[in-house]
Image 1 (tube, helix red, strand yellow):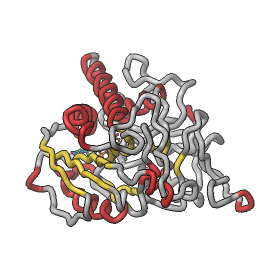
Image 2 (cartoon, rainbow, N blue to C red):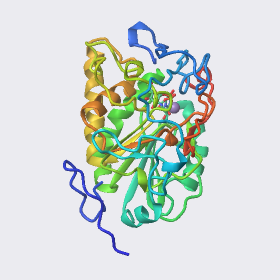
Image 3 (cartoon, helix red, strand yellow):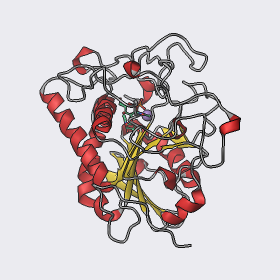
Length: 353
Ligand SMILES: CC(=O)N[C@H]1[C@@H](OP(=O)(O)OP(=O)(O)OC[C@H]2O[C@@H](n3ccc(=O)[nH]c3=O)[C@H](O)[C@@H]2O)O[C@H](CO)[C@H](O)[C@@H]1O
Ligand SMILES: [Mn+2]
């Protein structure tokens, strides 16, 4: 079957020959800052000293304010091709990807000749996460497609050798480390930007940029690919705008006013065509450079800058929290049918030093 290629994004001409183109703290004010708490208790959320990924502090999760993306299941309205129990489209007509809204057979054919780069950083002790990350990616990530794992590390000798299927390779890229975990996390933007220009533009069609302290536990395929995509943060997908933990200080480059914002996106899973990711990472890095010169660090570091960028550059697809979950921190709601990419438990105090 010969299907037309996916429609390219207006600002992203497809690459020739490819399908579809291509502390928690506020710096000085407290490196282990805390998420705002967005409301009362809810049966959906585990409460207490918790938070997404645990940033060394209490990152309590807000509860639904009525405009979230999840809701009750209505079997009468449920069909094979869509979901009536969750939000499947943004107000700017970007699909939100949930189990049940896509057909992998159609998409796999459309993206048949696509090469996907998966960037992951394993700096200092985080190399311990690589083995499970790569093993589970081989089982679930873009199976049947061409994949290059770009593993950025300061410890190349500690990159495990994991058996790979045909068409898949690991490229180890040595980079420097930073003393503070926040700096490690933020400098990913600069590194992805540099390497996009130097080689990713030539080597792959799409980039998927993820955290390493995670494992794949179900299918993550070409349904995520689009010129520019972000992922709903699992702690905030049903929160009200006012409860999103955006950067709220106007003098920060990541600032988002109270009356703006679509979703709260996670720092640990975004991507798109190489050109779009290059633009995103360059802009976020530049914003962080300006902040540093002004002696301010965004409340959630790179994630705050990503959120600002995504607000003013609307993504062409949005991934549901199926694509980023933490079973220890969150109770799974009934409409979350699959957990595709989940946090691996980690001892923050131990692993970050
Ligand atoms: C799942 C998710 O949305 N995670 C985001 C969340 O933090 P997390 O608490 O998930 O942060 P984290 O400790 O996983 O650090 C982010 C990433 O930086 C890398 N790393 C970090 C420290 C280190 O010593 N070595 C190393 O390699 C590694 O790839 C890690 O996954 O907020 C961070 C900013 O505050 C980032 O936006 C993360 O993407
Ligand atoms: Mn993480």
